[in-house]
Image 1 (cartoon, rainbow, N blue to C red):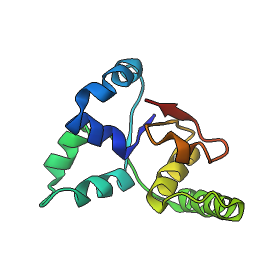
Image 2: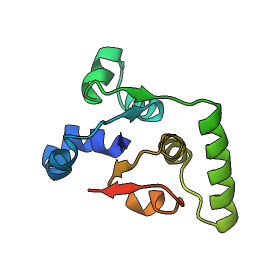
Image 3: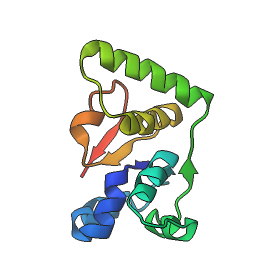
Image 4: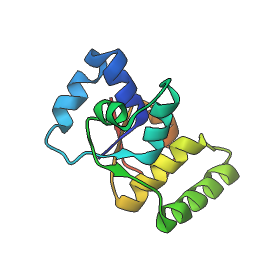
Amino acid sequence: MILDTCYFIDLQRKPSSVQAISARIAHRVLFATAITYGELAEGLESPSDTELGRITLGLPVLGIDESIAKNYGAVRRHLRSSGLLIGDNDLWIAAIALTHGLPIVTRNVSEFRRIDGLQVVAY
């Protein structure tokens, strides 16, 4: 499972809001993405790898390769032509999830559910 950026933010600001989902997914293999790393780094004055690693619970970080970039382009094209485009960062996270066949854990359900074939776990 991929934990969306909002999960890590909520874990820092409102831990009780992710308590139930954390218990439900504790037995699963979990990942962060390079996109989430960047979004979290934006919110920090002087982000260090140590601090980002602590915030992301030391989870493995999935990056972007050619397959993911290709999926990103296809999904973006489809959403744009349907008038349902979502933000680029969410689109990249979705492309990573689709390429790896992993669900996304998020509270940002309305945007991610626009993407055909993407598994979304809401909290």
